[in-house]
Image (tube, rainbow, N blue to C red; front, top):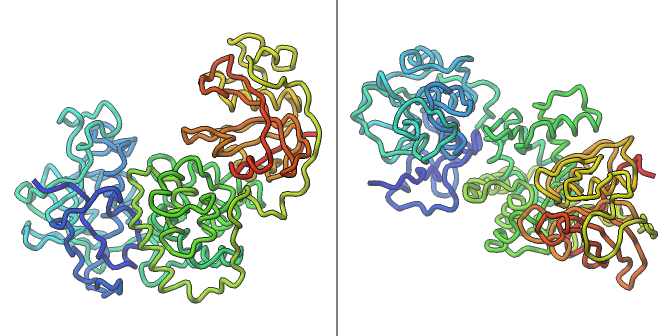
Length: 554
């Protein structure tokens, strides 16, 4: 039996790839030579494109492969409207819809799909295995799949029990929605997209460089980023959004050019930055959002070790991306630090190809004279000019050393015993974690009124503060600040980062030192996991931390 590895469409014309720019290969899977077929004979090995008369099909093929790779999508005839599952015909429907085809509002069935496909310019042909091309939609009265070339198909087959009901959502076996060997005998027809097949504006044009991509590149150039760094970013955004589509969505709630998850992040930033009347699908608004948060959204704690296996990391992933002199480094640093996709299905090769296509063929028309870099080391989330002067002093009240949280009993949170959840942030669902402690301690210092907490893993809270109205974050400590970040000695392992509270700031030989108080210091998330310790400026800098505060705090 042949491997079910995705067919290597790496030789597909690059500009066709950019029109949908979605996973063709799992980067972690070695492609067998027998599978690496030149499915699209219209391309050259040097990356130049030769147009054919046939319509581009890579958009819906890529969308189909993406759904098959997403294990939250399983098989069910009862729940076939991608909620979260599909059946064989609705799988084809959603692949087309996601690629921009106007297929209507209701998923078709095998009995009704002929009318929809022919109205879109597809033509029906009697089944002939020797004539099949990638993108052909295979049909019988009871089943349909999409041919992806070299003897493989992708489609929705059956539920986890080999039936049709799919009572449990998602792909339980890895075979419910997946690639498979072609069984040509079970199909009587195939539908082929012709030159008259029509797509909506959701699908970016493959005729040259994508207009949105070029606007994004210009914005990054204007912000001072290098050509290499910009191309690395474009490679990632092109893959994430299916070809720079600002309306692209994913089953896990991602949306837009950068697949912000949840999509409400776009609304929040728009509202805080003079775009409250702008729809979140607006490409120009998303470009502004992405450019403004290019640095603050970087995190090291999730994939920096994985990145180090492929590239040389320049202190932080942000530094590495900004200072990159080769495309692979820029692509991987942005992927690992900014996008942070599921590493096992990160589709790295697709990201590389898109980056190279733009770097080689399109970015030469943009001036990158203002390119900036970040020196190795130091807290790289903001520019040095934004760091200001440390404010010395003591917030007061938090004991030094280790202990339990009962010292908080006398404060306004009334935390006296292990069952007390606090007043400001009364959430003990996951135990006495660092986030639980930090918000309640900040409530003790600044009061419970006039401001509100926000959620997120400990390491990302500082970066999130930079995007929220009424909040700020930088590299300068003040007594009563929160501190958030990744990396030793501030944070431990696990990829979630850490958040704590700045209790004291004193002068030190390194410039300044801070005493922090923190929860879950020993990893137990127990009532006894309180700690307060000192960190120097150099230690904080090497950990890549942000100090955050609400504007209403005194």
